[in-house]
Image (cartoon, rainbow, N blue to C red):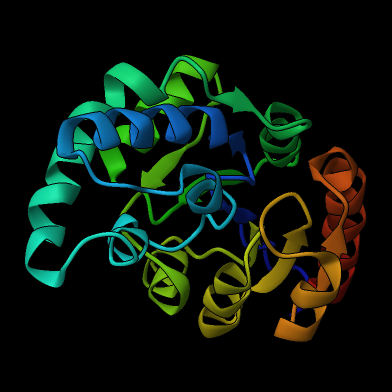
Amino acid sequence: MAGMPIPALTVGFDLDMTLIDSRPGIKAAYEALVAETATDIDVELAISRLGPPLEHELAHWFPEERIAETAALYRSLYPAHAIAPTLAMAGAREALAAVRRLGGRAVVVTAKNQPHAETHLTHLGIEADSVIGGLWAEAKAEALIAHGATVYVGDHTGDVRGARTAGALSVAVATGPCDAAELRTAGADVVLPDLTGFPDWLQRYAEDRAASLA
């Protein structure tokens, strides 16, 4: 309705391979896990398919009855091995800053456990308004809906499913295990090579949104 205030913009972001390149850190954490458990894990293969929860990957290497204890061990090793080697993805800080320039909020919704997600962001100086961990694929919609996100940015087809379940626009970046064609096939509304083009896209989106709500 004309004259009504435009709802605040909230944009959700995935973490691994969207905002951060966690492959070096996760590789180091898996190597520490191999040393602790004497289990043969193809670490390069594991880090090539980041996105799903840790337990999904561990199921390839450990019997079901050991997954819970192994996940707990991995998480105990993670801070000492995975935080320092992890890098910010190109354009990550600028993407969140672009949301704030428009008066919006940036929320991180990730399958990674929340304490580790928060530690990564703090270490890299990436400032999110909220961080919600432990959610994967369609379950991400819980947090996106709760925070009123109208856009969700991720690198995996699971992120696309989460956005669509939440009724949010799916913006995909082809910086993770899924290429641009896979992301489009999964239903992404927008596919970008990486986050560097996100601020310009967001500006156009915000202008179109304001015009449609005016």
